[in-house]
Length: 289
Image (cartoon, rainbow, N blue to C red; front, side, top):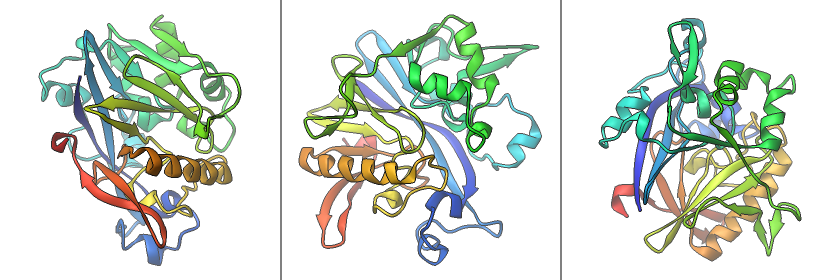
């Protein structure tokens, strides 16, 4: 197995929305805001080369929206997912599987491209993976979340015939003291969390004797590890709080490595227990492992 960091650019979001109830006097020291109160965030995906499968986890914002849309988010850096793949010697047609942690535009926008007046899958040979509960949640979104579920990112996946659903384990979301997981392959499992949005999937990869967890929006960055640091974007913040607490305790016990999708400065970290609670320990890049 080989892992590749896929950088799909950076974008900006409101710092207050990203840090919730935490005062700006605290979070601004961690991720300084500009004059519009916007902070810089990564769109960091993960590519897994595992036998004859090439598995991409999330794919950034994409490039098919209009200038008004992009004007809200101040994209920067190289946002073309094809160029990011090419930097590692791959092409979009090589991708066999696309795991979508959830269907918010900054995680799945690169799934679909515009060709003339048609919207078609960017990864023409891939199976796109979601789960039925989250898919239905996105299809009939609540008023608070609907701006994040863009039909042009989602419906063409199903219309292409390339969509398949991950089954969710019976028995609830906690099994043997661990948040519920289901097997995707011999080396990858998926865990399900509900605080940010319904049935978000967090891939967990067995790699070189370690376990790497792709944190998606449960922990967008190193600075979201302290328990009160919960995004205002989360649909159910108290659920997020409980999921974070349970996950971090498990991660300490099992010595997990955390991989961050939105941290503009840190690709991943280990954890340790401190007097103030669980905190980041060693910062790493995949190339360090």
